[in-house]
Length: 92
Image 1 (tube, helix red, strand yellow):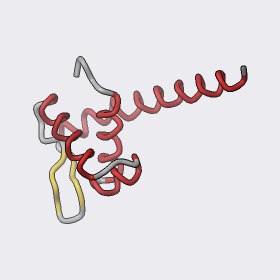
Image 2 (image 1 turned 90 degrees about the vertical axis):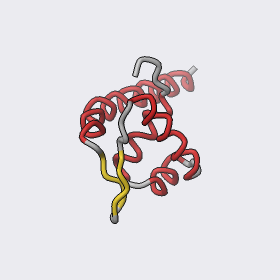
Image 3 (image 1 turned 30 degrees about the horizontal axis):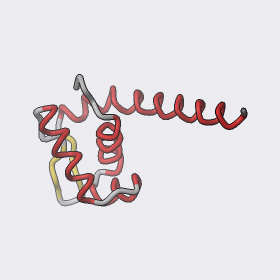
Image 4 (image 1 turned 90 degrees about the horizontal axis):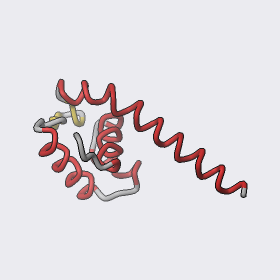
């Protein structure tokens, strides 16, 4: 993903962790439709289905599991850095 949209990464991680579109939407304060559209963009960009709907939720494909190993820690670092910048800004 050379021109990745950070929001798409956030959606990916939320669906991966929540194993469902509805729960991911609630967590991110988005609609189910917004999550579905984001997943469609990711699927097209990455050329993989990423998640397959099953009886107990969404199951990641092998490619999604591979991506999660990079996306999750990267997103946590970005969120942490962003929070520190906001805290530093509030001090002034």
